Image 1 (cartoon, rainbow, N blue to C red):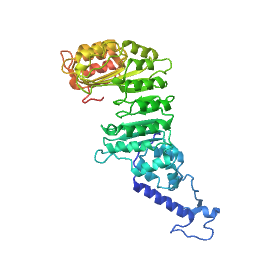
Image 2: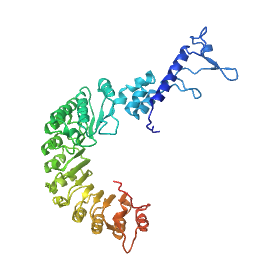
Image 3: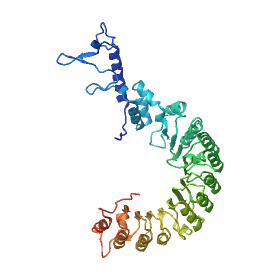
Length: 465
């Protein structure tokens, strides 16, 4: 049975602690209500008896044994169960729990409890989230840094929090991390730090870990030389690299990672780092089959120019890893889509975060035969009837679609659902997207759509993606 996370108050732990003390005093015969007499400290059967209500005697349960009718002995809770409970508690509640008794304190310091840990570094003026207490951080670094394996840092937008994260990283000289995640909850955070300070702290982890398998460093000033240090020490173990919005990394830097880390299975980066050379490196015989490739196509300035990836490079990628997922997030202005969807692209998950034109969506239906999921947040006031029908015809694997600020006639939408059938496992359509026509109105369209889906369906009142 899965244990639910609960908040343990200090009062509760104090009561447990007092109860534990009373139990120890009673066992030693020092309870103020006990009557010490001859043989009170012995272990004879007579001393281990108590009177029943009817006057007969019954033996007292020895310490550590199960007593279904008596009071619970919290100190004798099996350690494997105690570890499971503590894993679901926030760090501060764990610290309170460690004060209940000696056995709970010992469990608090067991290595198994410190393999996975998240440092929350926030400033009261910039975040409403609770930060990891500085005293607890010092204790963790002092006693458990060599136990840490799966570590993440959750940092708010303040420079002070980012600096605190770097200070902790620079002290992890005795640990061998398997995963590291630097999560900025808001910009600028790490990007405001001096580049040399950040690189120095990150290099400590790269050099000492030796077995890093997952690295998530979005929105950081990581650069090409630091990636070379990463590869030199972790090329045999690295499987996941997520580094979107890292402006100091060049295509050559990410190509170095792909050339040396042949076990890489997941990669997330910005489009400006994607190149034909990178795709060919990921498609080489020495490289394992890539499972996920995520590309963020983001326009920093209106009118930005984007390069084109050759069709032959995508084809090589599909031949080498026929089941890989290509996830693309587009945050472009309408006039910046020129280089995209001109030739066939093996994209499986496609998200348009800004307004996209009818023409581009029409090209999607012609060039994305592997498409599984499509989300369009905005399009304008021109109906997408023909585009949706074309996507249903050409994209035979489509199983999820979401439409926001768009317009589709009710008849075209019903036809689209009819063509896709029950393979549409997710259908999230805003109610204002659907335009009533001579055949269907908003009051009865859900019946027709539900019939083709094989389940009850209603339009959404708000976006769910």
